[in-house]
Image (tube, rainbow, N blue to C red):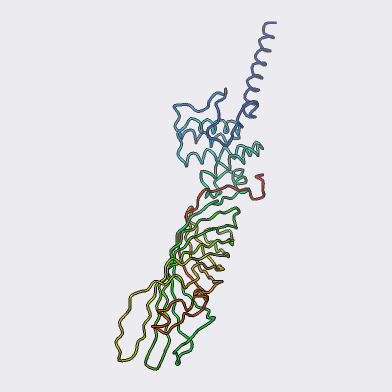
Length: 377
């Protein structure tokens, strides 16, 4: 009789041990999912699996081995405890999160897998899964992409301006009725960008441009009138931009369009008549701000070629701008008495059509993780 009860006790004990092991593998009543994607989860009553004597490398090897033999519940516990108590490098933490995500996915805890995937992309927004990564992990990451929400850039450039002539008033220029213009500009720009969607952004880019203008016309066969002007203009373009994305996201062309306000900070000029055999002194520059439309407006547009190595973007910008108002104020063309009486010159009425080429570097900030289909799984 005693032998019979002894066998019964052995069978019950064996069954209890087996049930306990099965309970561990199925995560029954384990509080693993409070802030599953957080590195600062609250302590609970579960026995920690990370031993103080274990090195991080040993813990990672254990994590990988547990995953390979299908102990997904133990993977989650070890990954959690490592996040709480181990001093991990960025790369080690990414490996921990990688198997954490894969284990969540294997156990069909989709929401927790997505939460951990967002944390993974926060730590490395440029990670590209490869064939050595667990398949469930690759499937989860494939549902997301990252994008910079904000950016700031600086660029320098040069431009060529074609004056669109409206009115030319010749006084004694009998040989040449149409003046020759050469207008160039050199610019420096600081830009700020907000990107609500991956392919669409809004930007504002204050720009300082120095314009050099030279107007020449023949007054007689032996005399040439030369008017030179140097102006500094502040422009503030606001543009909408869309990128043309392919699977090779390092090289992204984009197009943009918008409008800008322009303000002439300072304009100065010299005016001389060069005649053969006659020496003429170069006059001092004269400031002439008030005869201009100091506040002007333009339509702008262009094409950018962007190269994106991680958080920095290098770009080349081909742009155009078309002024809506004349450069010289038509109501004040006779206001400069010095030009009118001494140089027999009345400023032309024209608008600027500008073609520019610039290059710069953009710093991408605050990367955001976005679900491709508005949900993670």
